[in-house]
Length: 188
Ligand SMILES: CC(C)(COP(=O)(O)OP(=O)(O)OC[C@H]1O[C@@H](n2cnc3c(N)ncnc32)[C@H](O)[C@@H]1OP(=O)(O)O)[C@@H](O)C(=O)NCCC(=O)NCCS
Image 1 (spheres, rainbow, N blue to C red):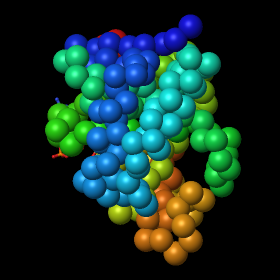
Image 2: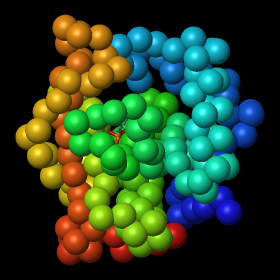
Image 3: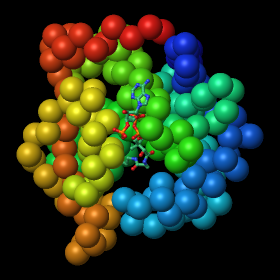
Image 4: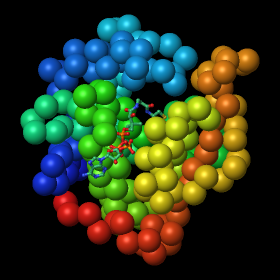
């Protein structure tokens, strides 16, 4: 079974092959990729999209396509990092949107849907999120989700040693914190 979601403004759905060129354009945009060590080629981007699609097909959930008024806007969702991190095992909540979809609250709204699923359906005890120390826009989403900055900064193993983006912040949200703060009452 594949989980997909719809709110008044958004859809979170499985990937389709016609999403791939739009995703490649996002991954080749220096504004979107400011906090990643490199832009992605079309081939690299397609590989990432296919992997997200496969994981959703296998597990029923993952980094879903975010659709706004029937337009591909990027991805938002949940992921188990495939490489070891200091706090593994974990499930992360993450996002990447085309710039024309920034500034409308779409990432936060979609991530709240993903968190509701993580805590209510998957019954996870905790969800994490991490990003480069300098990525204030992404951290603002974490803060809007009421995630807590642990202060446990770490070196991201996929970013080259000495690279200015290697140091990452780690935010966490436990199921009890999420149940207590009330913003899980999203309409799905
Ligand atoms: C990180 C990213 C998803 C944040 O996008 P965003 O649009 O700033 O975040 P949100 O969707 O939560 O929108 C919040 C903004 O919408 C505004 N907004 C407008 N209408 C709104 C509404 N109805 N509800 C909530 N917020 C609304 C908020 O005021 C806020 O604006 P501000 O940034 O001027 O304060 C986006 O910048 C991105 O994709 N970046 C590139 C990829 C990336 O860095 N990913 C993370 C790597 S780990």
